[in-house]
Length: 220
Image (tube, rainbow, N blue to C red; front, side, top):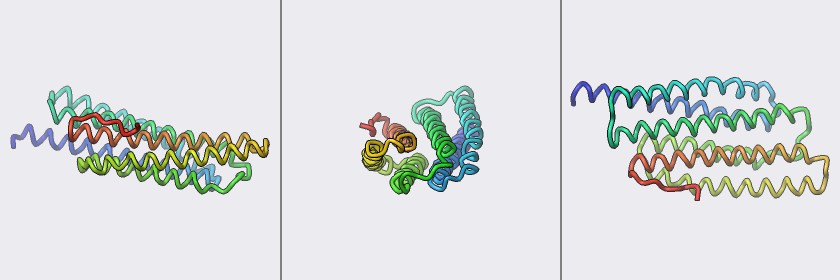
């Protein structure tokens, strides 16, 4: 192996590790945002909101790494796919982090109120979405197409839970107008988590493209 190739492979490995670091922060932000809501922990919600700046900066730094690799190494075929896949994955991760911030902001709005119902389905939905992020990143690291494909089934499960949450909260609103404001916020939280799952599914699609060159649509 030439020294140039070895240096390039090292740079790709560094890129991958930075993406995993960013992914780990995003997973934690998702968990903390929903935990802050369930426990009405406003300081934890504020941590999520402030921590988003770190994730945004990581996205910028990784984008620079990708562009520098393309400009200096002029990669082709599989190598170019690796870099472009990483570039797109960090966009999905950053948007997930934004949705975690959205959830944390809901915590700020309703923390002073008693919850209209115990939060069971929302944390369950969030845990599933968080696992999807982890599985998507694991599939990326391992080039595991089969693991990437499992994200479709998990996304369907998340969608099903969201539908249940929506119907249940709609019933609350119809039966007691005093619950409308909080129920609307909780429906929004469900929607944010559902979008996180969609972005995790996008990562699965990008892994499949990286490994096979095919462009599936796991969100169908």
